[in-house]
Image (cartoon, rainbow, N blue to C red; front, side, top):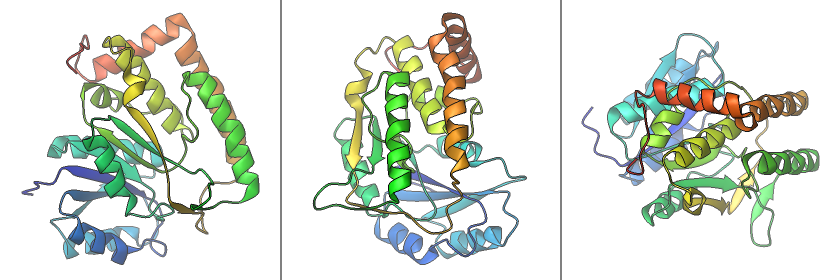
Length: 273
């Protein structure tokens, strides 16, 4: 494909035929020479596949897409996109929600933060003066409860793990974290950070949290047509209980880490990852 760009952004898509803002993606890919979009059609049953094919054809230097044979969920769509980005040799890899609740312009800010020496950037929906975060109150307060539970689970002072805008520096830990399908559906972001924490600790990098940054988004807008339903918060809570068994049980934690390392083809991670 002749790709020389530095950053790949994975965009998982399921039935996004009418919501995908193709013009904005094409304009950004044309203006930002270091950013490449990999769209993942997650077994859509509408015309999303055709839309993505046309989008990639309109700017093959800045966009590509892959097809999943069946609907596998956002977690697996994101993971498959990461594996493709690794195959293509990108240095930075992240994912972005297809509805552009987070503006594409924030990608530039994320890249700058990684350039400064950080490894992970999380978009954070913090409602502050001078920032336009438009979110329904019910979801906001449920989100605060969820974030508190996640912070305790991961032993990480994180404000927002579920925002669909994240960017990572490619390294051995990230590759290992993406080597196996996720065990949860709605909270795969939490499982991903749990995996990275385990892998970084195993590599001897005790201060890895110093290279993780939350970036308060300048704007975020809840887009109509979201596939997240109120019942999903209950499912997310049950998934956190499942993740707790992986990350807190000594036996399960060791087994879980061994599975990740075997999936990545590494028997031991070292500080050089």
